[in-house]
Amino acid sequence: MNITKRQKDILFAIIEEYAEMAAPVGSVTLAKLFDVSSATIRAEMAKLEEAGLIAQPHTSAGRIPTDAGYRFYVNSLTENADQKIDQAENNPTHLIPDKTFDRSTHALEIRVSSQTRADYAIRGAVDSLVELTGNLGLATIGDQLYLAGISKLFTQPEFSDNTRVQNVAKLLDNLEPWLREAAPGEPLNIFIGQENPIGKTSGVSLIISKFRSPYSDNSYIGVLGPTRQNYSRVMSLVRHAGNMLEKML
Image (cartoon, rainbow, N blue to C red; front, side, top):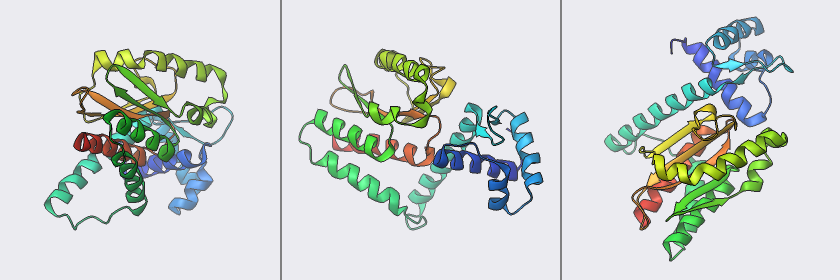
């Protein structure tokens, strides 16, 4: 998509601020962040809106990301992650570790490594993802779909609307057979909002990692949460959970 660097930076700032505050992001907030005038920000936001990357809720002067905006953002994160992996392989001392992420992955590893059975290890990894992300966690264990954290998911402000809760419930009812039939092939699979083939109106994102387990070469672990979330952190944690389970099991 052809947008300028400043427009890209503004889009990313809107996405990250919205993930943190759960409220539309206004031009005054962004003007302070970028040290430019509010008029300049409004002009750039108008271009991002024309491109379909952000939208203006009717109740607010601020903007929120669209599914297309999130997809652009996630694609950029994926490209950057691949570059970092290449850099780390070529020069392991090149990257400065993220201490917050390291603590999270350490907690995940401790919980999983303490288990003596494969099914308990997978359940432990899911439970850790719930605690670390605040999303609903899920994994396939043989022919069963293990779910945890439904109450955490529904405490998110997006689900104060009962209709949205019902849409998510319908998605969950169909998730296990869809995973079995579709078998997403990438190590990390991300379905945002309307990209969800079984829940286009649910307003959630499904982030899952494929891994080999004693049960199947196509086992899955991941989270389901609102489209408004910290994609960088959640994607990294889900990817790590899948890699860790494959190595340990």
